[in-house]
Amino acid sequence: MNTSLSSAGDGAPLDGLLVIDLAQFLSGPSSALRLADLGARVIKIERPGTGDICRTLYLTDTDVGGDSTLFHAINRNKESLALDLKQPADLEALKQLVARADVLIQNFRPGVIERLGLSYEDARALNPRLIYAGISGYGETGPWSDMPGQDLLAQSLSGVTWLNGHDGDGPVPLGLSIGDMLAGHVLTEGILAALVRRGITGRGALVQTSLLEVLVDLQFELLTTHLNDGERLPARAEFRNANAYLAAPYGIYPTADGYMALAMMPLPKLADVLPLPILKTFTAEDAFTRRDEIKRLVALELATQNSAYWLARLRPADVWCAEVLDWPRLLKEKAFSMLGMLQTVARGDGTPVRTTRSPLRIDGERALSTRGAPRVGEHSQAIRAEFGLHTLATANDDHSQVA
Image 1 (cartoon, rainbow, N blue to C red):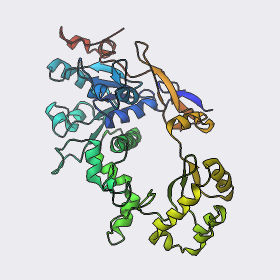
Image 2 (image 1 turned 90 degrees about the vertical axis):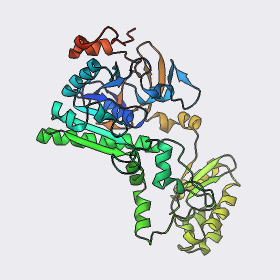
Image 3 (image 1 turned 180 degrees about the horizontal axis):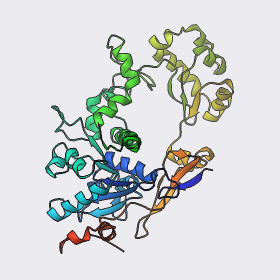
Image 4 (image 1 turned 180 degrees about the vertical axis):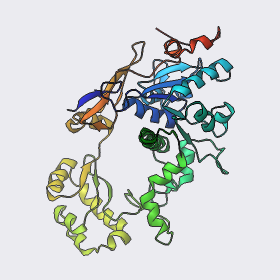
């Protein structure tokens, strides 16, 4: 079992850094979450009352303490400062924070942050050492720049939907917001690189990416093949497709009691273990050109026995394979529990949320924090007092919900 490194200090790599999270939904806040897991202090700026729209963006009909499970997952270990950026006093308060921050993250549509007077040039004038990070849907300029930066739309434009499903299915999206999540990871990578450079030169930086750019990069391996192979379109398998560019037997197959994944391997090796001697009659080229035929033969054999039977035969023979697990099975596995990937966090009012932990380990330790996602404006009074922002508040400006 891994030991735990508190993400709020005491050796955390980013302890002492101040991050202003101006983002909503998934992509930008997920980047701020990664920085918080590494020890940064993250102050989330939310509109008074309703807060981040992600609070009511439900994945299902499940909420916890009045907020969506999605919001809880993506905003743990942050503080919430409620500011109405249409009010000059609150906008000025934000600018005061920006002047003292190390990182600012925003994912407004192009033009919005400029109208607030917080463009990169504006922010750099306030704080030359600031790392100013932004995520857009499709870049800041060009004919797509004004389109909604939404994950399914970005997947649809990127070409990735033609890699999933089977031949003849039409485009099939990935079953999670992969563009949003990747954009958060890529932005974090850029922020960390910019922080390293700042440590050397003292200069801040503008860090940018978009949902479309990260989805194109996600496909770099296959797209490079396309660009250097006469620009042939990917050909998905008709049967048990798992990768449009990989030969048989690559795919997921039913067994007598579940499913089994087979990765890349020479057909003769598989022929000896299944046993299925007919596989030895196929050439390496056949593994591509006749892959559906080969996959059907493999599927018929695997369906005759349960998964445990096949694992006991295939693994000792160094056949790359794995049982296909659902979440309940995964959570019960000893190998998973030894990773220590789950934690229970609690909001300021005591509302508990069971969620994941950072996938990153540093010096053998994984970040751990028991603080859950904040209520809207939960830390407003404390933050205003700490940074001297309370002097700018109007009579209607206190939106905190201190327990």
